[in-house]
Length: 155
Image 1: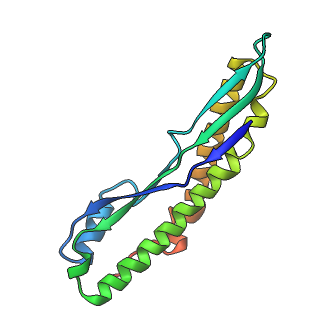
Image 2: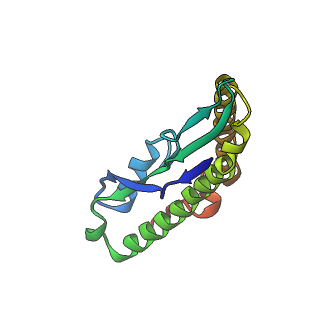
């Protein structure tokens, strides 16, 4: 039985704006400025002749998508500094979501053994549902990272 946590894949998406206010306006149109996903995680179960799960191999795949301000290097220094501060705070927030993934999936394999395939599958689904709930609660508790500094202040 193993649970393998792959290194999170950090990707970016472009946000354009001639100045920081334009970037703030663009980000305000989005549901979230960054996202953390574990949807590609999966498991393989092994069974005995009676159909009980004897071992489980879990692959945890985490992807994080962060904004990249295309025109950052051409912005005034004060706006660059504020953007960099914001991105650092946003990264800290997303790392909190990654921590939740580890908390909820680190021992999932042990919970799935000794069940039939359907029971093990239900444990997987229930745990992912609980993880999503914990992630949503984390966002509520941090106001989607605002309490961690993810508010951009225009210099």
